[in-house]
Length: 89
Image (cartoon, helix red, strand yellow):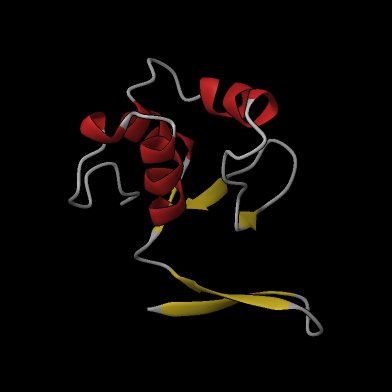
């Protein structure tokens, strides 16, 4: 399923089966806590940014494929499952 996200002027077509939350990102990267995801985003400029951000203190969703690609680029490819493990339910 795809959903148009954004204002009436600018939007991004997002496959809702492809997005994961911080816990899903942490699981993919082998991080102990989901809070570490925001630290990674500050530390690594190539770390994917959310495609859906519901605001301060609320859920942020990232594209799973972008997280996997970034992880492999950083040499963590073996730790990244190829199935939809870590997907938000």
